[in-house]
Image (tube, rainbow, N blue to C red):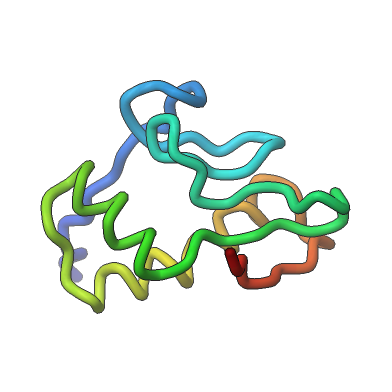
Length: 93
Protein backbone atom coordinates (compact mmCIF):
# COMPACT_ATOMS: atom_id res chain seq x y z
CA UNK A 1 0.00 0.00 0.00
CA UNK A 2 1.28 3.43 -0.96
CA UNK A 3 0.31 6.44 1.10
CA UNK A 4 -0.03 9.81 -0.62
CA UNK A 5 2.54 12.43 0.25
CA UNK A 6 1.04 14.87 2.76
CA UNK A 7 2.50 18.26 3.52
CA UNK A 8 3.01 18.90 7.17
CA UNK A 9 4.01 21.99 9.10
CA UNK A 10 5.37 22.39 12.61
CA UNK A 11 3.58 24.59 15.09
CA UNK A 12 5.37 27.77 16.12
CA UNK A 13 5.00 30.14 19.06
CA UNK A 14 2.10 32.60 18.67
CA UNK A 15 3.17 35.51 16.49
CA UNK A 16 5.94 33.50 14.84
CA UNK A 17 6.18 32.73 11.12
CA UNK A 18 3.65 29.90 10.89
CA UNK A 19 0.70 28.24 12.56
CA UNK A 20 0.27 28.23 16.33
CA UNK A 21 -2.23 26.47 18.58
CA UNK A 22 -2.38 27.29 22.27
CA UNK A 23 -4.84 27.96 25.10
CA UNK A 24 -5.87 31.21 23.38
CA UNK A 25 -6.79 29.50 20.10
CA UNK A 26 -5.24 29.04 16.67
CA UNK A 27 -3.29 31.74 14.81
CA UNK A 28 -1.34 32.10 11.59
CA UNK A 29 1.50 34.46 12.42
CA UNK A 30 -0.11 37.16 14.52
CA UNK A 31 -3.57 36.74 12.92
CA UNK A 32 -6.04 34.80 15.08
CA UNK A 33 -8.02 32.16 13.17
CA UNK A 34 -9.78 30.74 16.24
CA UNK A 35 -10.06 32.57 19.55
CA UNK A 36 -11.80 32.39 22.88
CA UNK A 37 -15.11 34.28 22.96
CA UNK A 38 -15.71 37.09 25.44
CA UNK A 39 -17.75 34.76 27.66
CA UNK A 40 -14.70 32.43 27.81
CA UNK A 41 -17.11 29.50 27.44
CA UNK A 42 -16.60 28.93 23.71
CA UNK A 43 -14.31 29.62 20.77
CA UNK A 44 -15.04 31.57 17.60
CA UNK A 45 -13.77 30.88 14.06
CA UNK A 46 -12.76 33.60 11.60
CA UNK A 47 -15.29 33.92 8.73
CA UNK A 48 -14.50 32.07 5.49
CA UNK A 49 -13.89 35.21 3.39
CA UNK A 50 -11.36 36.52 5.94
CA UNK A 51 -9.78 33.09 6.28
CA UNK A 52 -9.30 33.03 2.50
CA UNK A 53 -7.47 36.38 2.63
CA UNK A 54 -5.21 35.28 5.50
CA UNK A 55 -4.32 31.98 3.80
CA UNK A 56 -3.73 33.81 0.51
CA UNK A 57 -1.36 36.28 2.13
CA UNK A 58 0.60 33.47 3.81
CA UNK A 59 0.62 30.74 1.14
CA UNK A 60 -0.63 32.33 -2.10
CA UNK A 61 -4.17 32.26 -3.43
CA UNK A 62 -6.06 29.15 -2.31
CA UNK A 63 -9.01 27.45 -3.99
CA UNK A 64 -12.42 27.67 -2.31
CA UNK A 65 -12.18 23.94 -1.58
CA UNK A 66 -8.91 24.37 0.32
CA UNK A 67 -10.38 27.26 2.33
CA UNK A 68 -13.48 25.20 3.21
CA UNK A 69 -11.31 22.28 4.36
CA UNK A 70 -9.24 24.61 6.54
CA UNK A 71 -12.39 26.19 7.95
CA UNK A 72 -13.77 22.76 8.86
CA UNK A 73 -10.43 21.62 10.31
CA UNK A 74 -9.84 24.59 12.61
CA UNK A 75 -12.41 23.58 15.23
CA UNK A 76 -11.06 20.03 15.20
CA UNK A 77 -7.47 21.21 15.65
CA UNK A 78 -8.49 23.30 18.65
CA UNK A 79 -10.50 20.40 20.09
CA UNK A 80 -7.55 18.05 19.76
CA UNK A 81 -5.42 20.58 21.61
CA UNK A 82 -7.64 20.02 24.62
CA UNK A 83 -11.00 21.69 24.37
CA UNK A 84 -13.27 18.74 23.71
CA UNK A 85 -16.07 20.34 25.72
CA UNK A 86 -15.93 23.76 24.04
CA UNK A 87 -18.92 24.92 22.04
CA UNK A 88 -18.27 26.53 18.65
CA UNK A 89 -20.09 29.38 16.99
CA UNK A 90 -19.48 31.45 13.90
CA UNK A 91 -17.96 34.89 14.51
CA UNK A 92 -20.05 37.76 13.16
CA UNK A 93 -18.67 41.31 13.06
